[in-house]
Picture 1: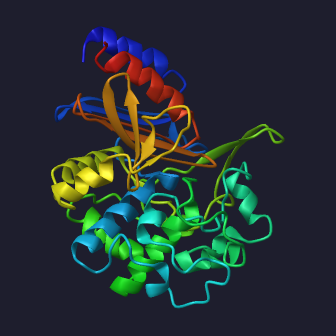
Picture 2 (picture 1 turned 180 degrees about the vertical axis):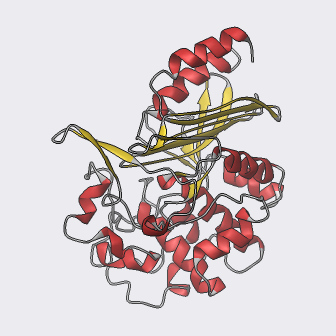
Amino acid sequence: MTEKEVDILNQITEGFRGCIFIQKEGKTLFSKSYGYAHLADKIENTIETKFATASAGKVFVAVGILSLIEQGKLSFQSKIKDFLKFDLQKIDPQITILQLLTHTSGIPDYFDESIMEEYEELWIDFPNYKIRKNEDLLSLFIQKPMMYEKGEKFQYNNTGYVILAMIVEAIQEKTFDLFLNKTIFQPCKMKSTGYFELDMLPDKCAQNYIYDEKRNGYRTNIYSVDVKGTGAGGVFTTILDIELFWKNLLAGNLISKTMLEEMLKKQVQVSANDNTAGYGYGVWTRMFKELHTINFQGSDPGVSFYSEYCMEEESIITVVSNYGDDVWKLMRELRENLYQQE
């Protein structure tokens, strides 16, 4: 990285809190931490800090499902009724694995981002500390009607990935996080990645902070998110572990190259205004000028995460904040300054 590029990075990251990682063609160009992991004690974030990632964890659930498909334990056209033995009530039992993966199922979303602004609104009447397993979320959506007929359209849906995780558990007869640890985290040597409970966090985990305007200070998000992550998200990881995940995924070490190609290509269009914007299996796809980019991302109160792979540049950029800083704005600026220009 040139001195000029470093100067630009220092300018656009001013005031940022979290970690940034930039790699190109297998060579790490930039890796830096900012701000505090524990604000009160002034413990700084480091490259080894474990960060919450919100919905970014959906990519791991998707890879887990795709690996089971390749093992012949289910298929894209398998129905949820084949695995879920509880009363689905108004939920269509014919919803397929493919529809869950691509957010086209119409299943009632326990957190409908089109009508709810803040995730912590969920816990006004239902205590977040009760959410320690996927099934603990059932009461938040099981009595709701379908949002639309299955397969009708794309609409980002958290419940869909909770159901996928429950299907993993039904097939494997173990919790989905143990399955992902064996299937993805251990093979990739992602030793700092896992689904940790907020009241039993291991070492080097960052607290997540929300600015409280009424009290004019920062509070943690311990009452704002699930106490333990589910299929919808909530995994903790480091920027270095994310690099290991990309490396192994792209090398075909987790799923076959044929399945990987399907995972990373646009399966559904997500924007009426941008026909390059799409969703694959657990990942978003988009063109930046003439460049193909793949990303997974997440946002929760006090949490923001974005990791992107650019095919032509063979580059990985990961940005994570434990203060909910605008990683999307930062990513746009990084692209403009670091990717090749037309």
